[in-house]
Amino acid sequence: SLWSWQDSVKAVFLNRVNIVAEYDHVINSPTFSLKLPSVIALKEYISAKKAPAFTRFNVFLRDKCSCQYCGSKKKIKVGSLVINNAVGNPLLNDGPNFLSGYLEINNELGGMTQTQEKYDGKIRAKRISNDSDQLNTVIGVVATNAPLNRIQLKRLSIMCHGSISRSVHPSHTPMDGDTIFAISTSDKSSHVSEEINKLDLTIINTIASDTFSRACNRAIFEAKNIGSKPSWKDLFEN
Image (tube, rainbow, N blue to C red; front, side, top):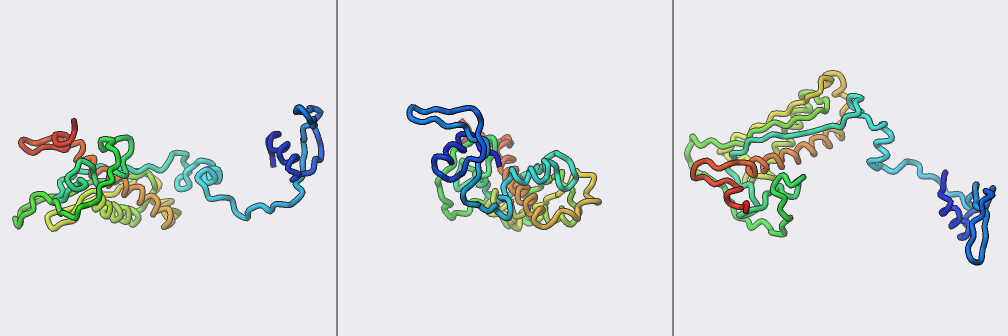
């Protein structure tokens, strides 16, 4: 392996190595001079690890920075688009923080400081009645460029359904007609989807479900008022 000259000199002084060869260059201190080591040998053998560390950097090196699903060097992407008219409350207690605020990226939910407030146990569901004609819903689409087949896309939709509960409380009420569509933009899904194992699918779907939770609350954050019904920005934005 290659060591810097500083590490080599340090190892010499710590008596951990033997000097095999030297450069002509001499390094000096007020009381000592030493030819710069060019080749050194460890006095005690240190066995290498049987397997390399499982790090993101090493995975990129292994895969040559290319997608292992389709061969592209493009990254796997996921995104969600949501219309939120759910019965449940999207805020932590009375607000202004959103339930999925801890997932926020790039101030998409107002960039508020994370709160230490705890859930108070109160159910804040709006427009609850016994009217059989009451219609509320979360309807959205989650898309990815990963080559997923129909069965895998169904699993993606199922996991994103669960993510609604992280952004709306209560969720999936009798008045809600929650529907999520999952799509893949890849044109190779019918050829290579069998190569995506359960672990890969779990990682993709977990990230996608996070985006869906954020999209549920971002729909409320970006909404504008209708008549006398105030929006989040009317209530909380300065």
